[in-house]
Image (cartoon, rainbow, N blue to C red):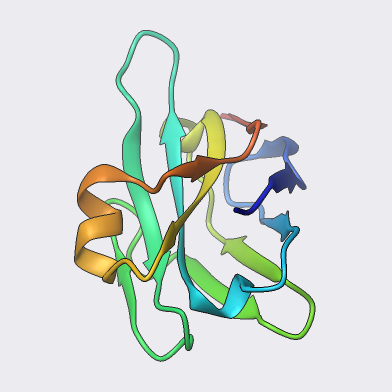
Length: 125
């Protein structure tokens, strides 16, 4: 089992950058595929990015490709989401998710069994 704590959200102007952090507890972090989803007001939660347990494979939603980068540090039990060139439409609550032994495809489709509490990202125009 793993517990996830999201942080790093805030208010930023369009074109700016933020880095989200997801800190995980547990001794088997390196066995989890990790990802980020987001939910804007009045909309369903949507996939943003995922990374394999080794960090060797990543996959992004088309809407963030080229602007966001997901990475992980297994020694620190942490996954990051670097967000550049932010747009007002990126405004949402961002959630970290983890899936034990998931493929990146499965995690991107359904999310994992574990979720963080979410962190608010607001991009002003």
